[in-house]
Length: 510
Image (cartoon, rainbow, N blue to C red; front, side, top):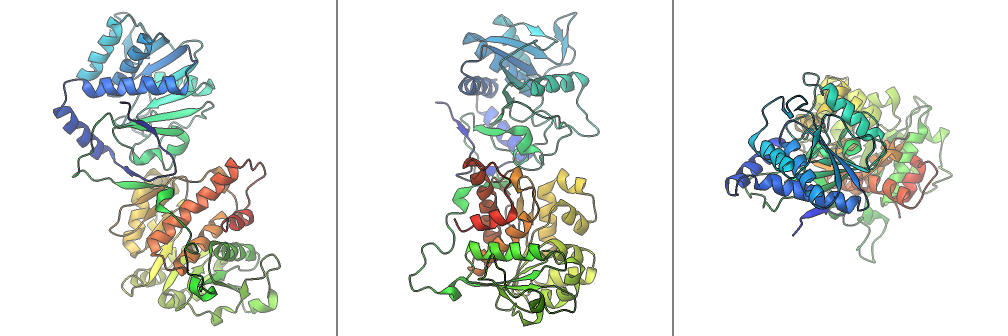
């Protein structure tokens, strides 16, 4: 029975890094007849190709030097037997001898010989036209780096494949993608539909950094191999089953606004009031009982500047000194500018539950004394969530954004461990990390979230879930998933206009 399944947002999945995947593969091979896994991989690839493009008549299979190429030879053989026209290319072909220029791994060599014996021809050039392409150039052992760039042949073939506009199916990984981190040096635009059939396990790199753009729709075939109980995942891909309901659902009829907790938003320095209002509106729509807003206007009382939000009159404005952050969940930094820095020593010490975002993060990253106060919060039993984007994370870790993006899981975990708190490293495939717990990679969201203010909305949503009594990691994870899911729903419902942050905040209540 085929065990290929589509990876969707409805459920969560364990993710396994390269080392664990190799361990699982080695154990399976030790108990199976030789060459079994590669034959299963080729058959699974061929079946999925037929399901994705049942009317395709001419299929190009591009094979590389290693076992990923061997999977490609097996897929080509199966498609050939099913009557498809298959153009088979191999990066290692020596046209003079019609053999390889380098020694193949034993399984890959056996698959190549099986394909040749069935009458398939191997070419050094891609076909002029094709209906469907299979990328079998590099797998988990072939991540590209500055020290290991792609060969000119591979680059030419990938350019040809992805600029054609035809659907592409990648075996195990898109060529050059790092299975552990999602980083890649190959970033040529991909014009056609993209699919990736991950074999044995799901890899974290498929879902964060460059992974989602490179992989397209991900599928999994476990090749009928049961996962060993003693091989642990490195992360979890977070789906809808980890965010079953908003806190106000299933509450007692005798509830009142105090039952859902208070959120206090501190931010909105001159010229940036909108950021604080977006966070506050999002907290309100996510279910907070009462939401207080303290605007940072230098020495001028915030109330004298703005005492009501006409678009959201339920918000209550207070002077920063009037907030009681021992009882309220603090959301701090949204549009805070430099004015927020003066408030941070007291807030870091007193706030029992807090979300630090944007300018609060920049201020803490620049001041060792504030970092010490942040690190001390865990020992005091205070719940803390940090929500940095890659540049803000880089300021904390004193590195470049490239360093952060080259290994997002590691960066998020470093911050979580250093400060004893929950960290949401935002971006494609946001990472949620906490000390001593498995990192989560979020599976929802799309490019519509790349607009001003959506981060402020996320901070407010997290604050509301903390106010409802959820643990910090759970609150962060559920808010991140729903934040992305709302953007996905906007796209699914045919929203052709730009998704704004204010529109996103309103969607939180639906």
